[in-house]
Amino acid sequence: MNTSTVVQDGWMARAALRSAAWAEKWFPDAYVFAVLGVVIVAAAAMGFGATPQATATAFGEGFWSLIPFTMQMAFVVIGGYAVATAPIVARFIDLLARVPKTGRGAVVYVGLISMLASLLSWGFSLVFGGLLVRALARREALHMDYRAAGASAYLGLGAVWAMGLSSSAAQLQANPASMPPGLVEITGVLPFTETIFLWQSIALTAALILVSLLIAWLTAPGAASARTAKDFEGAARAEAEPLPPRTRPGEWLEYSPLLTVLLSLLAFGWLFGEFASKPVVTAIANLNTYNFLFISLGLLLHWRPRSFLNAVAKAVPSTTGVLIQFPLYGGIAMILTHATGSGDETLAHRLSTLFVHIATTDTFALVMGVYSAVLGFFVPSGGGKWIIEAPYVMQAANELKAHLGWAVQVYNAAEALPNLINPFWMLPLLGVLGLKARDIVGFTFIQLLVHIPLVLGLLWLLGMTLTYVPPVMP
Image (cartoon, rainbow, N blue to C red):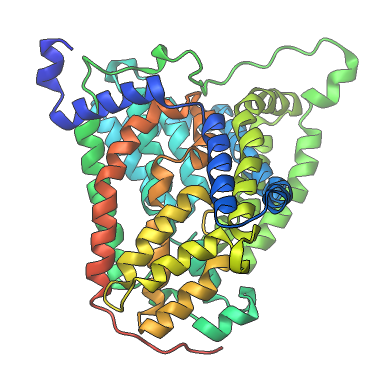
């Protein structure tokens, strides 16, 4: 490292660069990471008494359990590409990308937009953050580090998404019709005023945003040591390409907007009814609706079917990691929750029992935060595993007289922590950017080191300000 770099980059930036260099050398491909997770969890399950057959059965049954979600995440990438390559959208993103004046400022700018967007919809945050990074990367005069910017685009998923309106756990607890009957009897109904709109929750979210942006600023490499998009062979470009001319009569419908208009009437007719019958934030938080909106917009903005199909064809290779790795995570989740060992207990139940037994009323938030973070690393469910965990976690909260709404927020805040280094959620964003997990994990690892004590400490301290309220039945 030369003298100019030392002067320009502070100690945190140098630490991030060293972390990135280590990750680039030693961090395996996300597929290897997923397979190792399967092996470790399977070995642990058998170590606690699960038979090899039961473990293998759970893995096989879980392998396909995330297929709907896998396709949803693949369409996050495809829809994002389709919209991004439409000429009018590309120009709008370029307009937004004119705001930052320096490379370091651009990294912070991406992080702010990503986190604010994630409070409305984590899916929107993931796509929009990636598209903004690509647009900023084309401003070569910024000398923006492409890796650091990609890490900032991921902060919405790695820091605050579960504290916002798309929190699966908070949404579930606020809607009794969506809860399993057994859970309703334990928790009652917990409106948003008792979860994400608690002042303690808002204070925690604000602290996470401010600290995350500060770390992004301090760890962003200066111009002398930045690696721009040109340094990455697979870095994706969002530039629209002109449509080649039609060469044969049979292609006339592919080049005519007729089919686009007819299909768009159906698509946007359904979307109008969906958004008219629900609050906007609730409708957009539904991943199917979100993807349908992006695909429909992409089709309409490309205008001609051939242009839309060309964009989709270019997007599909970026979904490779999602398609081959998400089934492995489904297998991990099933082994944890269904491979029973001695005492007819699963590994997930053993983990929860361990943490619940060592907790007290005062330490419940801290202990359950650690538990949620550890289990979230192996089961990155985006809140879906709350249905499995909530009955025994919330029963423990009742027995210890801990605030039930805060227990939900403990789960939300802590579950996001492993996202910072777990490739599971990175894959769609990496597909958009054309990067590998090891390219950005050096920067997100520094975020994780700061977030762990910050989140766990605030969960404990803020939890002390709340008092137990008995469940309110619907």
